[in-house]
Length: 185
Image (cartoon, rainbow, N blue to C red):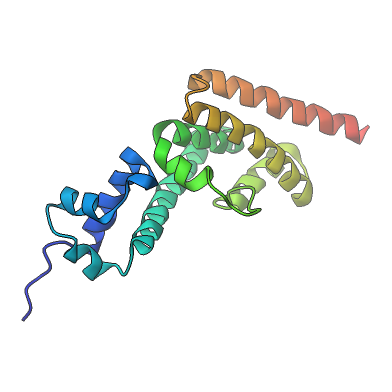
């Protein structure tokens, strides 16, 4: 029976995730991973065919962490829609490099995150009474606003507390609601 591998695929993925957390995607390379795992590069390329494959695994793990954060925010905060926005911004604050990996790169027209989208739109519709199309359009507008705050928090341009952020999101949401009432009249 062949010996059990000392370095597993999961260990490599976790070490790669930590490397990206600390130094961004540009800090991820086979030598740095081998050093973190205290091994040669051989186990890395026995488990992965390329560094691009490792980068995809890191992105997948980062996305899972992000989705978990959004789901927790929506479960813990009321309204759920507010919870998703605050969770997005807190992810940008707490996971600077992972946020940059997921949301500060070329997406070629994929403007808004699709994770939890149905739940987010449903929460917005429940709060406002909007149709699905109207809720999606308002969500895109709000997401651009939230993303702007998240980027400014992520890069250190803003140093807002959660309370300041929540107050700003509430004002924007109220403004959207007022605009809808004006349009309905």
